[in-house]
Image 1 (cartoon, one colour):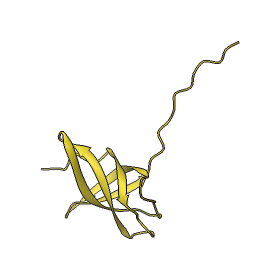
Image 2 (cartoon, rainbow, N blue to C red):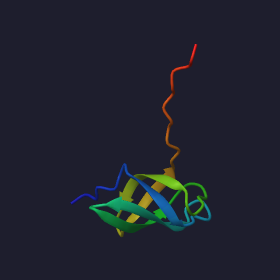
Image 3 (cartoon, rainbow, N blue to C red):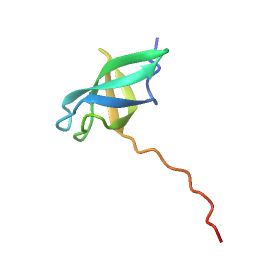
Length: 77
């Protein structure tokens, strides 16, 4: 069974202090929240929102920083 968290966003709860180092990410799933070990190619601070790009054995996920796009509003003329 594949883990459905790939493609979801989560919040870093334990910082990733260096490229390839481990931290933790909290993901809202199945009506609750679950913690996963997280790694990234760059340091990421606690509290940052991340996108889960891959799921590995042992509840380890690869993440990248996530900056949500804000919709553009029409300009008043």
